[in-house]
Image (cartoon, rainbow, N blue to C red; front, side):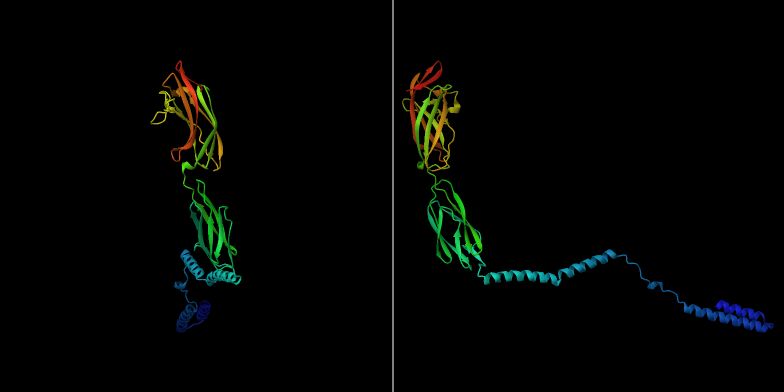
Length: 336
């Protein structure tokens, strides 16, 4: 626009004849050009670059701050408090409901929730306390050797029969109050073991001679009051004077430690009841394991039971007499 006006005035100036007028007109044109240029510069101000926004380069830090803020808000959220409050309210309401229905809200036996009882092998009676706010309670599922009597509204007497066995016995029962129950474990100790309580008898004992150069001892034994007790049948040989026969030098496995007496042990037997039980015994004793003092001798074969638990013999040994002689360096046996 300024350029157009200046060109118009310049053309008109050329049409003038006077030099003085040309100079005046030229100065006037320069002045107008300066004025218009100043106005134009002010109408278009320069853009302030310093006020421009810079691109955000620390986005991860901002995101971390946002996450921390969100977590903090979530932790302090009233919704969580409402949820916890609701859970506590449910517990209180459940307990209140049980009270309204008159059901047990607490239940203990001897002041405990877990009960274990140990009683001796003899017959006994022990009183136990029951603590509950239920309507009623009872004792159930008792083992055959236990019984109970309700002595008051919060106690009962437990009776146990004597244990006549050599092993502990264990069981359990329940104490029930409304819809709650509590398990009670009970153990009764074994009767003290005494080998003299065991009774052993032998019937139909006989000897088979020279069976593969051995003396075969066979018998039927009856054992009583030895449930669960391991017993070992053992054979001994005595000579005519009642002295034990020694084992031969080359038969050390048949020699008793210390004394050197000849012996042989059979298979272990273990009764499963205290009532009388029968066991068939078969034991081989090599003839040459016996060291005879004479070429011909009268001998006695003993059969008895050994108890490893007490390291002693059970009363009730049986015996059979027989004869033995040495012929060509070999021991030969025969019936007496």
